[in-house]
Length: 94
Image (cartoon, rainbow, N blue to C red; front, side, top):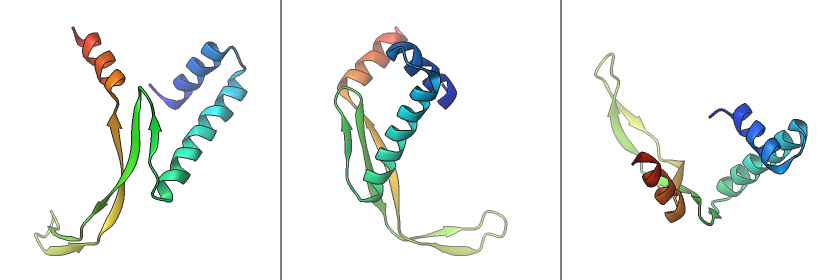
């Protein structure tokens, strides 16, 4: 599903215009980004949790030359699916 398709689903489900739905989706995405940037978790009960993980600095290799390079420490976003989401996906597979 693309962002445009998600906006269509929100507009139909909430019976609002696509422009209003686009603002709502953009606001949610922006709010999640801001919270993660601050190092906070975003928990949507029944859906899942967005959080950040710290990655340690490590050594890697340049695939072209094979030369060893240093990969700096970083923070990365992480999503953990909630129990209800896992159950919904599991039941859809059957």
